[in-house]
Figure 1 (cartoon, helix red, strand yellow):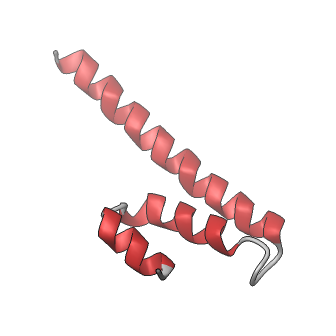
Figure 2 (figure 1 turned 60 degrees about the horizontal axis):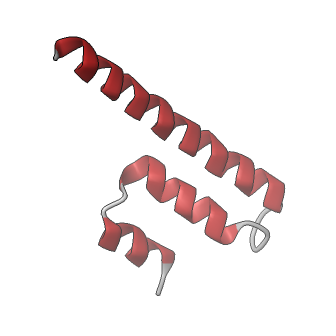
Figure 3 (figure 1 turned 180 degrees about the vertical axis):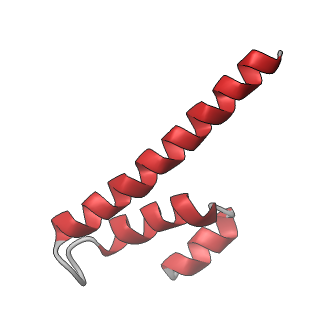
Length: 61
């Protein structure tokens, strides 16, 4: 299965899709550490957005 097909099938969205993309290609195209750092950047953005969302839900309930 191609990575793009997995991302679309699971409906991961932009940030998590990029995490999967960069982790799956780590060491195959660019420098593995560079790819893993990119994956970490997108994962940190996803975590921040979810924490922000959870925080805003907690204050409205």
